[in-house]
Length: 443
Ligand code: ASP
Ligand code: MG
Image 1 (cartoon, helix red, strand yellow):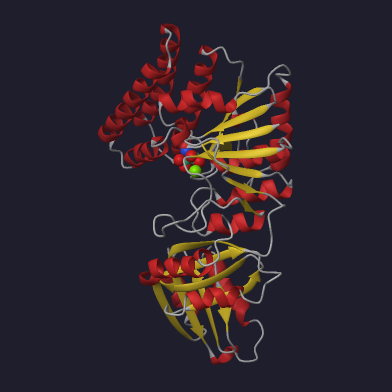
Image 2: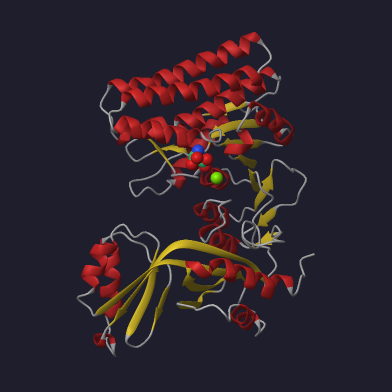
């Protein structure tokens, strides 16, 4: 089994949907996972916001506007009058369903039901298109097998069992279409895997079906070695290990949902990042076989807050770090980087929703300093067989930039530094110069 996931822009217009048929056809069995058409989930979020505010006038206008966009897609996608009618009836069903929420109480439950409509629409429209083209395929409802538990973690045993049962209903079929992003929760209600979650769906489906490959099709040619918006001459990284890819996905590379690496890693299924605009390009392959001992990429994550706690009590004390971490735990705030000295600890968070409360509690331990507008610069690669030069190369490149924190040795795949965001552009450019431009070994 092979999994092919197409993101919002890859199904973003009638033309783009039509172009997919040549990418998905094969005699080998495959499951095609689709996102909502680009812009749809954002539009649905806006509709839910209007509904929360009881602003039914805006909600209705937004629903009408979205439906007319879809009507245009239908007009362009199909050639037969019959399919056009069928598709327009489908639009009416989905949009009338959304409109019904303007009459009623609006809670999180209804919000999730509305957010699910984007993927339900894209997959149904695409299935109609395949039918019109005479391509044999089956639409698999993700709500029949994709599930999260009470901790919002995927219920992998349930997913594997129910996906197998769905597939077994169609022994003659080799092409399946299903929705990314949407799922049921522990209560059986419609829920989702959070924004960008279609990649995660693809990876969970791949793991559940013991796929031989998971392909993530987007509109760029893979993960780049540096931020192409800031640095010239970036290039797609041909190979990454699962761990390197997870670090990069978390620290900046928007192309892949960070959670989607783990299910593939656990089942050792290669993940390929491919470009629908340039299908023959090599893209990025994430696997256990990636070449070691190299610096692969540099990424930056903005919006970081650094917190330093200085305390005489830390000296020779045990249990101090635990007490500090418990404060963050109480406010469900993840910590990204930490460094310690004998009398102080510095750490970073990217969610500052409870910053004031956290700082107030930390003051019980000592002096607290907070720096906002910080950026984590993360250098990703395989540092275990370190040619003694790796860190030298990195710090030599960064010599003109004030470093607020350095984290080395936490994982063998990541060396991170924290800087003020005002120095980000310079840091990325200097690292590019110092690491990739000097020894262009990739060519
Ligand atoms: N449609 C959802 C979103 O825009 C899920 C996805 O595309 O991955 O976040
Ligand atoms: Mg995405």
